[in-house]
Image (cartoon, rainbow, N blue to C red; front, side):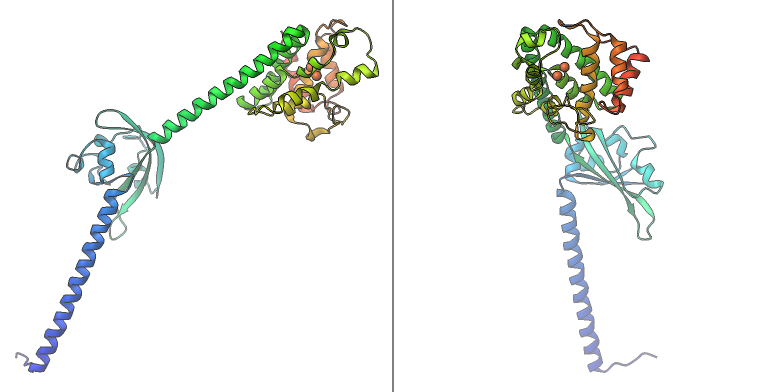
Length: 355
Ligand SMILES: [Fe+2]
Ligand SMILES: [Fe+2]
């Protein structure tokens, strides 16, 4: 039995349907606008973005991805991702699809990707899961950030840094040669101290860079002696108090000469402290233990060992055994115990030679 509506009821129903239709159209329009906005964002982001299904088929790509890979959108869709934009992790357990299938939530790595014209482009890749309405994994979204410009800047900076370091090395070399012209004995002493200091620093586990700084400081550590009259430096026998006082200012003289140069290592400070001793009995400041730079503690030991074991114009060489005996006696009192141990090991076990 069909239901009879009054004219009033029919009008109400039609009006309600109209309202619902209007609301539906409005929401459809809103969805279209939203979709168009999302599409514009997807297409114009600065990174290349590709959506891939679980079988490695490309489903969607944005404009930046087509520029990066060299393939247009039509050529990308439906092809395997590893054919379009291959990299070192394709077909390996490190492949982001493999890792995300094994439950990784985000995979990020740096890799060189191969473009259509076979050139390579360094990228940071970020991959995240693409899930269906029920949360099941249906593919991945990969984001490719082109870092070729960054790499070029990095390479330029590295080159400038290398040039700067070379100039620093040149300055040290020039100073060292200047000393050699005036005082060949000091020059030979500095060369051997530099060799031993570098060996100690290396065996103490210092980085190559820090070791290089210690070697350079050692190569010119007695620069301040250019201020000491040659007659005092070469005179045999005991020196007077006044003569000793003159010799003792050589670390400060060297520091004053070098302090204005911006080395990338604490060269001026290391030289300033190379006659400081752990118990505070050294000069020029009488610094104690940890207050003395580790670099200077290494230089101090190398300096004493070389000075005692080598011949001087004013005395015969005491020999390496006497030199090692001296640092053993002074271990922990005058000299850093760790430095002494490493130095002893170098001569006694590793057969290190000063020349
Ligand atoms: Fe010295
Ligand atoms: Fe010295």
